[in-house]
Figure 1 (cartoon, rainbow, N blue to C red):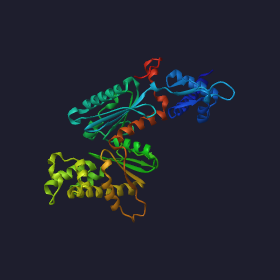
Figure 2: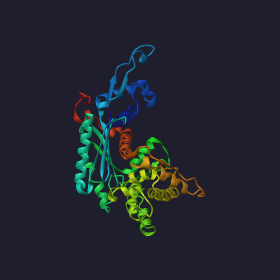
Figure 3: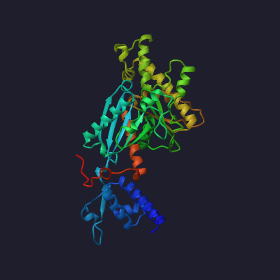
Figure 4: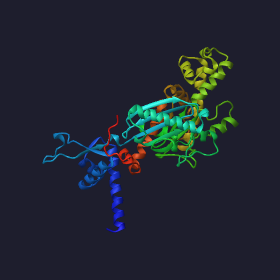
Length: 410
């Protein structure tokens, strides 16, 4: 066999292995016949590839499952499933003041989750990475796994991120948020913008070809999917909403720039308790302790200051929605993040203000159902999609550790 033929045979074997592994990652137990139907491969090829994936640590062969799996003429069908100990995926939301991590198996089932508050400005870059690694290690331990089991870690950061996982050098805050996680976390590491990951999570919940996911807590950011593709831009700046800083500084006073809805609710309430003419239950709370949750709660109870703030937030969201719709022709705007469960009054106000004579249907305004976990859920979903897309780029635990006994996790 000459070199060209050998190389072609090896490439074909890799293509067949990837096709079958993609199928296995989406199935429970499957037979060789089912794999043949899904991949178009012959029985002999399927059995050979499955044997290779068993040896590599990706699959395991299981019992025949009784009479139901037997063919009418004879021997039981060979049945396989993804090996549970092949590895796990880690998702992390590395925010400015909070770290959240979630460990999932290769089918996306949650195995462990932890969250802790941090002070990024005190920790610095190295401290953020160390805190993230410690939290991941504790979460893995909770679930009976360890760092050697991690195939891929996906980290969401509140900064623009380009295709290589880097943030623009001009932003000191962005460099702090994108702290150098790639060299300090287990497995292969992918860094992504947090709003982009929120968009990935929402897309998994309700697929849409044209949608903007607004991640709104402390800052405003948008994950933009247009014509079925996630927009990134030259330096990862698509969806950074920096036009709000320009508009609010130059054109409109006291509107908060690119601060998120949660931050604005808190800021406006703390200022309003001193200047508002009417009565407000928010005055019962020490000014420095008023939170966005307090504002939304007071608005539900009919507090006039809180209701005015909700109206201002709705007006702001309506302007942003019109801008996004006119530029991108999107069909849905999803408001995501920790405040999403309380955001409906803001959405109602914004819907009332959207123009009806724009010539094009304006997008539907909806609240995310994923709450504060939207970024970490998107991180796990992004990791799983990456493994399904290119499984040959990853090695199961047994192949990386040289342990072919395939131990079952605790």
